Length: 315
Image 1: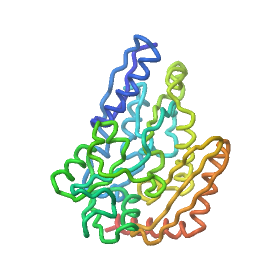
Image 2: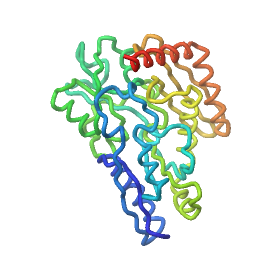
Image 3: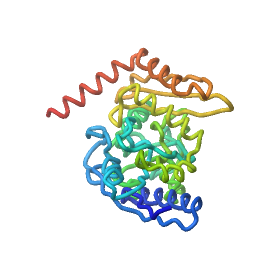
C-alpha cells in the first residue's frame, strides 16, 4: 500500500479520532505510512453563537472533504453526526467503525447528579437545539446559553463557574479521557441523542478501489445499520443542526428499535414515537417513523422553526 495522508480537523478530539483510525489501519497493513493533514473548518473558526443560527450544512466537514477531493489527502475522518446526509459527489463512507457511547452527559459544577437536581434557574451551556428543547421540556426554569468551542473548552467553562452545567456527548469525553468530569449519563431513550452520535465515518474517494479494500475492513455492520437508520429519519425531515430532532436506534437479536423525538424550541410541543422492525427493514422502518412524527404535528413544528430562522436571518 502506498503512503497515505489523512485529513482531520485540528481540534484535540478530531486528532484523537484520526489517530485511532490510523492505528487501526496500521494494524491491518503492516508497515503502512499514514500522515495527518490538519484542516481548519468553518465550524472551528466561528464560535460566536448558537450553532442552529448558522448555515450548518457541512459546517465542520466540507473543508476536510475538499482536502480529499483535491488530492491533499487520501482519507478523511469525521464525527458522522456532522456529515450532511447527502453524500458528497466523488466521496464514499468506506467504513463506520464500532460506535462509541451514543448518550449525552451532564457536566455540572454542583453535586447535581441529574438534570432534575440542578439549582433553580441554572445556566446550562449548549448550542444544540435538540438539547435545548429536551432540557426545557424537563426544566422550564433552566436558562440555556450558547456554548461553542472544543470539548475541553466547554468542560472548563463549567469548572470555572461561567455556566452551572453543560451537556456534552459521552463519546467525546471518553475519547479525550475526560469521563471523570461526567456528573450523570443521560439515558439515550429518555434524552435522545443526535442521529449517528458516537459514530465515526472514514471517507475516501469513490474511485480509490485499492484503499477501499483496506478501509472497508474497519466497517462494523451493526454500527452502520443503526446510524444509517437514524440518518434516514434526518433525511426524511430535511433537517440538520437547525431542527430539534433526537434519534436512537438499537439492535436486539434480529430486530431494530428506533426511538425518535421532534420538538419545538421551548420543549412544549414534544412528539416522541417508537417503532420496531427486523434489521433488514431498518431504513423503511426509519422512513415510516419519520412520517409518523410529521403526521403527529411535526410538520407544523418544522415550518415554525424554519420561518423563525428565516426571520432571524433577515434582521
